[in-house]
Length: 142
Image (cartoon, rainbow, N blue to C red; front, side, top):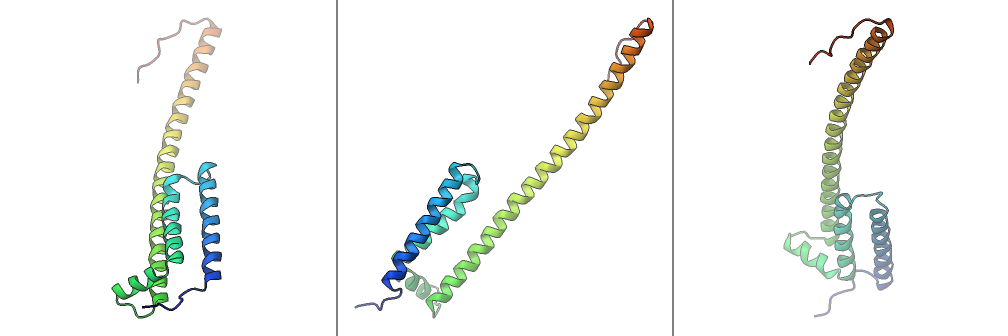
């Protein structure tokens, strides 16, 4: 049984070339450390899935039939919306983790700054005492 041509051959070739160029660019970003491998994993997997669907568009028909979706393009739109939601959730989780790390680092920096100021005051006090010739006291234990 012959299936009707879902995508014109020229469009398939163009789409595969664009997706492969995007994949190469993504790999370049990972290699230059502008994007972490963990952050790019979702992009790589989805691009590979799109390449496979573009090369074998009958897979989209089968998926739509399996999900009882009448129009295959609706299945593609549904998958796209799901992909965007997962990507947004992934970015939100990464942002939350970074915000928590930033908050912890700011608190640690403030504690270290306070400790440094305390040490500077103690040192300045000892230097004045040594300059005046008075005997110095041993440092107080904290």
